[in-house]
Image (cartoon, rainbow, N blue to C red; front, side):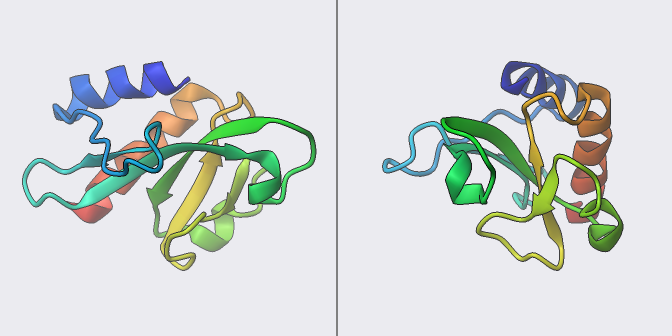
Length: 114
């Protein structure tokens, strides 16, 4: 799903992934090209780090929203990992949330930082 998100963001916003951390070479952010604010962070962490059951790692995307309380009740959406939990959510990229819904959440995040 990460590849689909990269393609979607490139086509819709002209933004490319920015890899900012040597310690986390698979983590990347997308910025609004106008104001340089992040509208998404894409990463992979062990499921246990996100307090999820099971072994292995899971991809996720952090997105800004103005509907935090409403969205946190949705399966596949968690309090934001390592970001302001009042304004950001973590969306699992494991198929729990369909791609088209993730894309809508990306659009919302982009609009909020713009």
